[in-house]
Amino acid sequence: MENSLNYAAIAFDGVLALVLLVLAWQLLRSPNLFKAIVLFISFGLMLSLAWIRLKAIDIALAEAAIGAGLTGALFLTALDRLQRREENDREEQDARWKSQEKKPIITTEASDQGLAAMIRKNKNHFFSRPLQTIAAISVLALTCILGWTVWTLPPFSDQMSALVSSNMPISGVENPVTAVLLNFRGYDTLLEIGVLLLAAVGVISVAPSAVMRTGSSPSPILLLLIRLLLPFIILVSGYILWIGKYAPGGAFQAGAVLAAGGILLATAAVRFNLSASKAMPLATGIGLLIFLLVALATMIICGNYLQYPVALAGTLILVIEAAATLSIAAVLVRLFVGVKSDTDNPAPGEDSQTLIFEEENTIK
Amino acid sequence: MNIPLLYELVGVILLGMGLYSLVVYSHPVRKILALNVSGAGVFLFLVAAADRTSGPLPDPVPHAMVLTGIVVAVSATALALALACRIHQVSGTAPLTDNEPE
Image 1 (cartoon, each protein chain N blue to C red):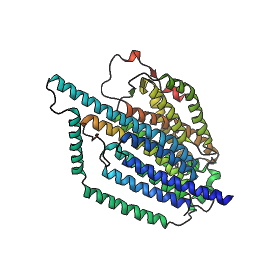
Image 2 (image 1 turned 135 degrees about the vertical axis):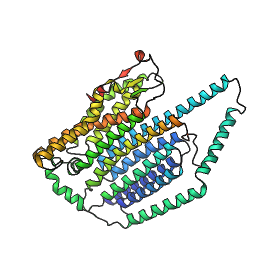
Image 3 (image 1 turned 90 degrees about the horizontal axis):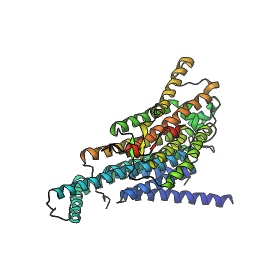
Image 4 (image 1 turned 60 degrees about the horizontal axis):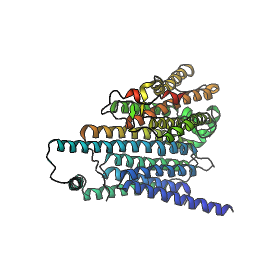
């Protein structure tokens, strides 16, 4: 019985590995970018199955919410924006031709073909076949060297896990991944929250508008879905944050789930104004702020940066995680709106008729 | 062939595929996709290597690293996409007529 289960597991792993490789190949080679992105989302979902097979439930949770969900949404909105602008450009060009009352000599179809040929030629010029072959050979060589290294790795390595499990009693939490993230390697996580904030600042400076518009009014089904789902999203996010102390979960997964709620809200509004709420900048910065305050306080009291007093470790970790959850959610929503928002022509006088959701609602 | 080795090798192959596409294709969205695939390969390798323990539980340190990595990857992706949109808006030169892979 156990033997047959074992065979089933091996077969499952084999099929999953094959599916991952085929999906990646298809998404990288797909001529249609929309199809490539949809394949990327399914690749992310398959990857979260692989995380479960590798006993990494924490990562599976984060991957399903961030890797598959949020990254896919980001790609789709960016593609939509790029292609919509391209259509606008073409319309403008047509209008210009019409205003000059001079019909283009070549028909649209022919000009499209001409453009495609030009780009193909340009591409060949830019990256010729011999160069492609050189790239393929170097990457293949690198892959083979890495593969050989992996093949000759020692079968077991217990040093780090032994160190973690021997220090678990003083960590203040029971889930080893949370202990590593927020206690043993708290420094990494502090810097990571900083990186997130930096990415948000970068997106804000590239796409300063915090207002997102969708072309048409949202469908009533989407609105109903949000009414039903949003309370549960907030509840689940809180639960994941809390359970991180004992089991897989924690600030990243909770923040990602909360961000999903915010993004759902943003897509449902005709006009979504992120800066309508004063709580938003506060939520964006609070994670790093609280983390730094705790780090400084522990440095003054215990003598070392981020060395928690053993009795207080659990509480401090929960406080940091709660603040980090808000920040992660706020930053992720900001990143999404930054990629999505159109900075071109804000139409005046539109505000009175449009629907405004405040981000505040998701945070409360 | 044990399970960690299988997934480690898949991770290495994903890294190679992503790197090749990153170099060869010129469309920015395609490049960012390729970077994400190679990142997924690195994550897969790290997590699979974490399973090489003698006990039943995997090593939590690489897990924490990958969790951090996933969040950083999504923020880098968002920044890159915002930059790509901006470049196209300003210059209009991003090669957007697709059909690159033959």
